[in-house]
Amino acid sequence: MVPVTEIRPGGNLLTLINVFTVSPENQDRLVNLLIEATEQTMRHLPGFVSASIHKSLDGGRVINYAQWESREDFEAMMNEPEARGHMAAAASFAEFDPILCEVSATFSVRGERF
Image (cartoon, one colour):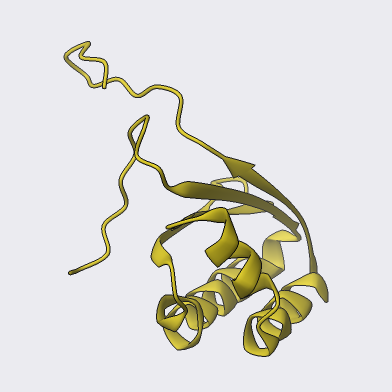
């Protein structure tokens, strides 16, 4: 099965929204680090579903929207040495504030609520 970002209430997925603050000259460096971490490590760990990496137009933030099958899978990832290495690398030049979430509601352009 191909991982797909699924944004809908009641999906039973753990959503991580991680907002990084970074100097504009390091924004692309952080994006590349997160892409590398996802390709080399995160996507191979049990429970990984998806990751979407966004960069702000002002150059000062990067947002990682990631999904895990469960909180337990997410917590296990946090204890993986390779994952911790990627996090330490990011922390060396960016600040971040991870937020664990569940989806409450979504809406479409047609006004449909899911």
